[in-house]
Every structure is written in C-alpha cells, then in structure tokens.
Length: 210
Image (cartoon, rainbow, N blue to C red; front, side):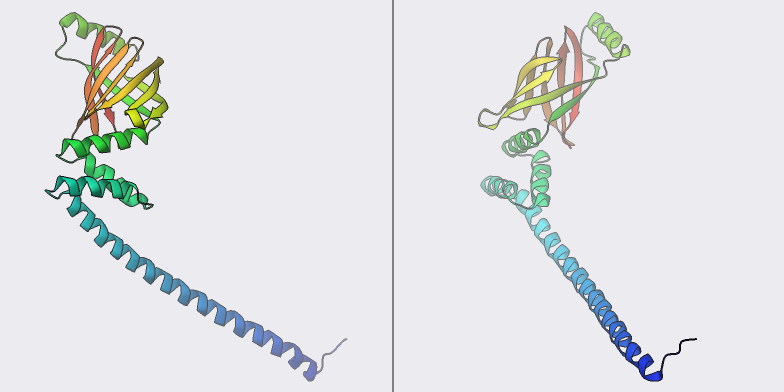
C-alpha cells in the first residue's frame, strides 16, 4: 500500500487552498459587478423614463413647430423607444400635419397592410348582398404587399392580387390595383378605415397600423 507523507499532503493542500480562495474572491467580485450593473440599469431606466415623459409633453405642446421638430429628431434617434414614441404620439395627435407624418413613417416601416373587410351598410341592397356572398365564400381580408417604396413621392408600389400603386395623401392611404381600389383614412386607435371596392362589390376596409 502506498502512503503519502505529511509534507507531501501539505504540498498539495496549499495550492488547492489558494485555488479555492481565488475562486471565492472571483465569485464575490462577479456578484458585486452584477449588483452594480443592476443598479446602473435601474438608474438608466429612471433617467429614460424622465426623458420619455418630457418628450410626451413636447409632443403635446401647443407649438406646432416644436412638435414637428421633436418628431423628426425622435425619428432620427438611434433609440428605438424614441422612434416608437414619436410614431404613437403622431398617430394619436389632433394635428393633421403631424398625423400625416406619422402615417407615412408607419407605412414605410411596414412590408404589407392587412385590410379586414365588412359590408358597406350604405351601399345599395343588391351590392350589399353581393358583398355578403363574397365574404361568405372566403374573402374576409385582402393583403396589400408593399413591393417598392418611394418616400420622395409619398408613394408605394403594391401587389394585391395584381400589381398596382398607392399614395399617402395627408391622412389618407389611397390604393389601386386591377379591380381593387380603396381610400383608407387614419382614425383613432392607429386604424385606417374607409371604402374599398373589389370587382364592383363595396366594402368597408379596416387595417391596423400598430
């Protein structure tokens, strides 16, 4: 049987003790670093919360020029929270110029628009029946795919069954393709809503922007 002397045992114990001590020190340092990081994150969150409240006040300012300038600066920001806040504030604003800017920004950030269809209650009786039959056969929604965007002209090339075009006109989104046309107006709640005609059948279309 092989035995190890006390001197040899101590030789191995000392490095192990040092290793254990080093590990505990490192672990404590990591915990401390994590605690500091959490504290820093909380402080940053509080600071950003204050900034967001200030920006909301600016977007509600009675000064139109200030609102428009703030919207543009927020959209140019690297912070996605500020960009989202700018769009949300713009879409819900009572200022149609700001709403138009927010509508353009929202649409140009999308790849498609999903338009839910309902019967146009103001259409003639026979037109309502034709629309109801089409909806019953499985046409509750149309998808408008954005194939190419042209911010310089506020227009978007689209495909919805067939190729076509669309434009942002103030707070209206107007689209046209073979057999499909519509004018959707920005409403409260970040909704677009308005008349849609598909092959002479009349509907009310609703699309969510957020």
